[in-house]
Image (tube, rainbow, N blue to C red; front, side):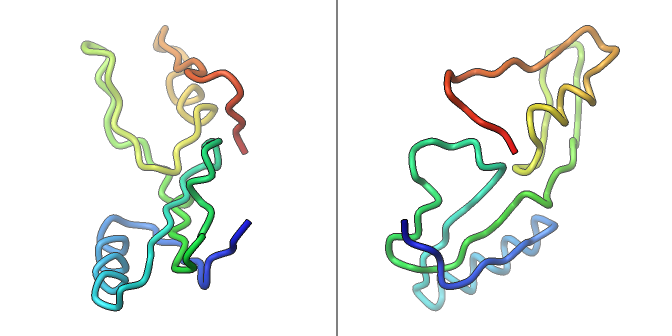
Amino acid sequence: CAPPDAVVWPQAVGQVQELAALCYRCHVPMVPFGTGTGLEGGVNAVQGGVCFDLSRMDAIAELSLEDFSVTVEPGVTRKALNSHLRGTGLWFPVGTVGTSEQ
């Protein structure tokens, strides 16, 4: 396990863009973190860098019942989405065996 050098909690797309541009200019690795459901070790900062904790970006932007699509920010959990979908007749099941959710 390799921790990042720093952690930031952006709350809007513009903040992510500014932070990413700064990291790019300074040649600093970026490590995205959404809701902690990944099992592949993608949040392991093997070369240091800045962890972008996107868990506070948890808005559900758009729901289209007609075409069964939803646009969400990266911090939206399956449980939060299903709570939002309650009463519509739709639900979002777990898609991968072994995932965990905070």
